[in-house]
Image 1 (cartoon, helix red, strand yellow):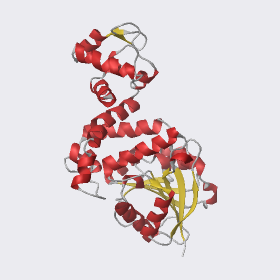
Image 2 (cartoon, rainbow, N blue to C red):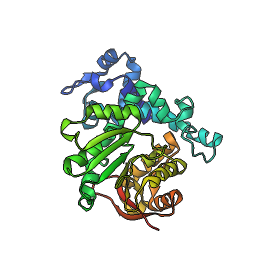
Image 3 (cartoon, one colour):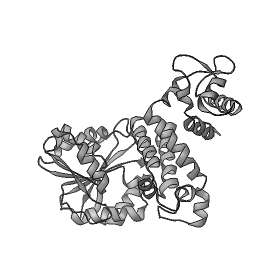
Image 4 (cartoon, helix red, strand yellow):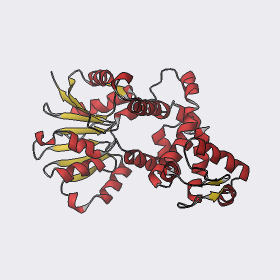
Length: 339
């Protein structure tokens, strides 16, 4: 019911109906949002009980620190995506397990049964502009919340060990946030951002003129053969979206293009045992793991899982180093070819 309250607050833009610097009667909120007075009071009082908003005098509501977060577009996008897409999908996860036992397929999920119309999350987003906008804002909100900053990889890996002039490919690099951050810090690399055609075209248009001499965008589907023989392949926040079946395919295409001296830098979560971290950190990892299961039939991986995945893709793929930057939710896994 906490999720129901959040969904109503999100759908009816209740946070926007409450003034920033003073309280407002619940009746006025009802009039502004079009939600009945009874339901407005029921939802708001439950929200107050969970720490969102506060009721300074009976039947009046005011913002507090948590409710003000809902006015920030990125956080509002995260809540909107969670309540519209994730919560309904979670309610169908058990049914998806019954219908598709031990499935690796991204279109046999709680999401595909709940609202995805039998499609994968990414297929659904490609066809649904409203859901795509929600998802984009949600991802921006996740990044803004801390722990997923591209600069953690820029400053957390010894890039000075990579030869100047090296070619670095950001596989599934989206809008180029990672590559641009790296190019801004190190001017000696040639960076190629690969993603699907529409994404790559948008990234190219938005690229700062000052970076165009060393960052380029290339339309590429990572389920097809890798066209670039690079020194470094970055796979950032990608493999956790895919089950082992599909992650192996992505990795094999990269391995086929690698030189003996090439390396893969995976920037993704490494699950640990509950006793190895704080309760809050473990909750964050566990919640993301369940999110991947719900939406994509994917998962967050332990170090053992990562080791097995690389070996499954190619027995020569070995983990050379693992490092988790302070404050980051993601680790930096350096993978090399060893005969």
